[in-house]
Length: 314
Image (cartoon, rainbow, N blue to C red; front, side, top):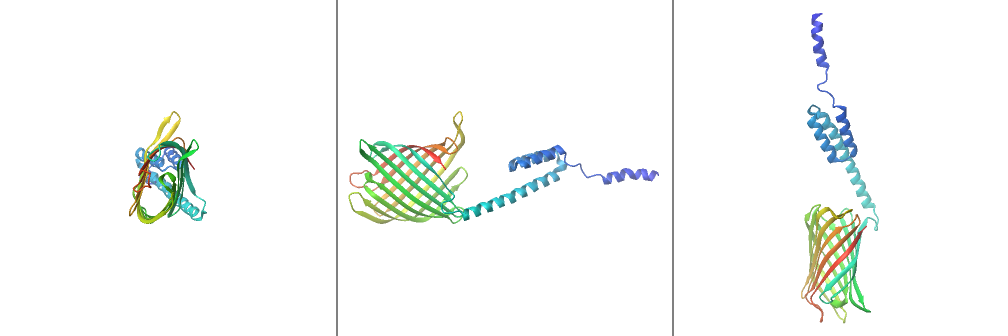
């Protein structure tokens, strides 16, 4: 009998679990975090649970592992569905863009104020990106038009790898006060993303170009040239409070494009500061310099334009 009593504690110890199960409040806390589907939340909660319950680290890690596996599978399914939707999209699907309208002040060939409007459209695919832009600057004062500038451009990009891309460009311009009724440019070449982060993007491009200019007073010229371009965007800050109940995102951006021919250089540089007023509406202040090394007789080489516009994104 004495041997039996001595063995009972040993048998009880052998049959006991190696450690206690994860406390129910801790398990409920982790499950509540998992229910949010937020990776950062789940990671923070499991880190705290592992610190306060070191003996249950294996079970906690198992719960975290199951969540991460399910999230990876869900992300893969969503990515596949998104890619399929893009591949099956029609020609007029998946376009986004913004419209601008506002005032401007000019110096150079004309000293005036007026109105401007611009439309930007973009469509992103798996490897392709399509960009379309149309802009109008116009003023009529006392029955006389003293500024009339129109521009339209279409530029597709093909992404070769994460940073290298090929581009094509077709552009048309009309500016009676610069002396031409039509100026056409075609170009194609390569571009590269020098900086590509969530807050800053900088890409450059270069390639051969062909340009034809038709003058107001008759005659035209055609020549081969080279195109150089750069686009820069920098998100300075988020949630900048402009008024008591308005948040904004401020972005500093600019673009530069030069077409260099045998006897003529054209340069267009635009720098702007943009502040969001709401999810879709923002305000933009920009300054543009347009330079033509060989302007028609009676015109100057450089125009500057200061614009304040409201932008609506869609």
